[in-house]
Length: 285
Image (cartoon, rainbow, N blue to C red; front, side, top):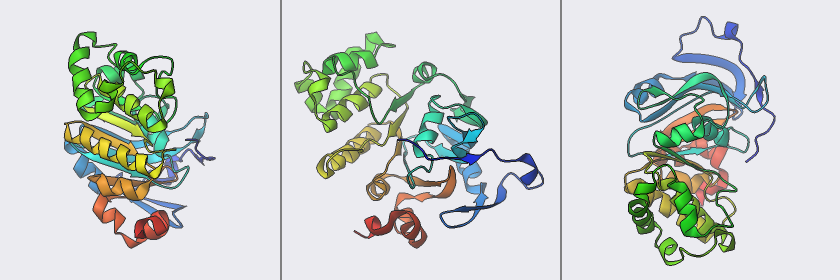
């Protein structure tokens, strides 16, 4: 999803004498003065599988979409990232997967600095990614799409194919059908299945429910939970904020490329401020 006109690069002089754990900012986030306290992030991220620290990133030279975003995920967690349009959600996910240049800050996987590594290197290290659009090969069959997912580990194709089909049984039944003839929800199954073929330890999902009917949206969230319960750590960016927070262990609310809130999904969905500023009537439904 496209991002709006972003914020500029921060000046060092503005924060030079302030401890890194707490940086006050005069700009508004969600209609209020933003104060970023990194204490909880630094404490929680100590044993994280994947973490991002103070990321500044963007698509145009000299212009940032992310403005100091933090994130961490622990083994076995399902993390949700929500926020208004243009908050930097998809940009954050792409920065984790090496698709957007990180200008400042670090991305770490199991203690290894993977900042700005190329996508194929990250796949080899156990990171999977499912983009929002153009996420299948339409001219190939379902089985061939899954074979493409296993191109780095061809010897494991049969084993991984059976694993994927336990989560998505319809893929096995229709394995010879061309992906281009599938519905949006079915394509999403193929895309997630292909990403799982490499046996990732962390799976990044970029708005998996986008463009689907309410019934198919709910199915996607159920499938994300099934993937997580199968032992895969999941980070999900979602526009359907209410449903995302219902299933995630922890959630992040991004605004203007930085963290506005971080808490359990249950706490966020019941937080009056989050409801007022970000969820609106969706959270009350």
